[in-house]
Length: 75
Image (cartoon, rainbow, N blue to C red; front, side):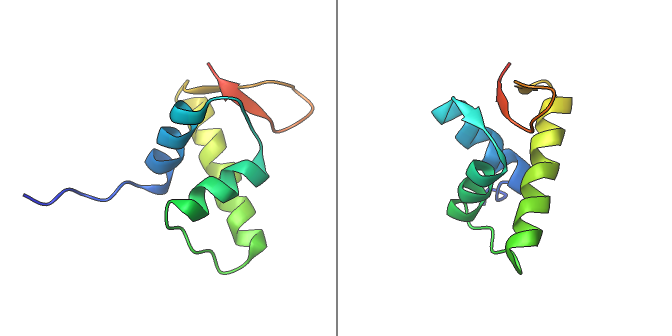
């Protein structure tokens, strides 16, 4: 049986759960790149990271630490 590869969101969630701490766009981009994501450019990488962070917040895995900044932490 072959396992399905993780989605980018699942890969980011796994890294966040393993490492904890605070997560901003830059740290999320690095985690996504380590998990195999190869963006076309830095702008695309940032957009993907922010989208995944927002979705993980919507799922309740992480919460926004500061209403004025896009920085998250484990819920």
